[in-house]
Image: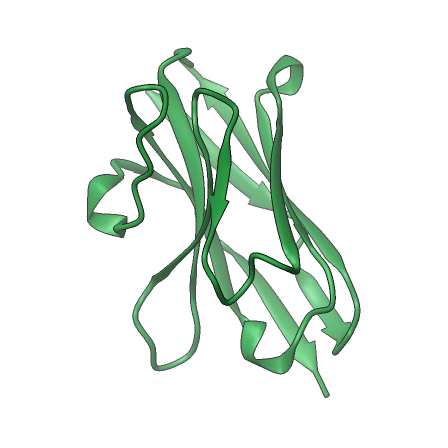
Length: 125
């Protein structure tokens, strides 16, 4: 069973940056992909970005010019670099994993079967 552990959240001023990490522990397989989601207060969980098995990445329109997803296979870790943060980026951020074909992009949280515990990101004005 794969376990995902997020870290790197915190409090930052608008315009600042944070880098979140999602470390995979336990049994890992090469056919799993990792995505980031977030849940803002009073809102549904929403897709943020995905790193596919083929190495391509995809991000939601609301963050694609500011957030970058990347992975370090040697460390079994996926990162979310968040720049130019805004107050509406305040949310709990989760990483999620699932088995997948190499290039499929899954954006619904219902498609994922493994989740981390979440890390809080708070952006102040």
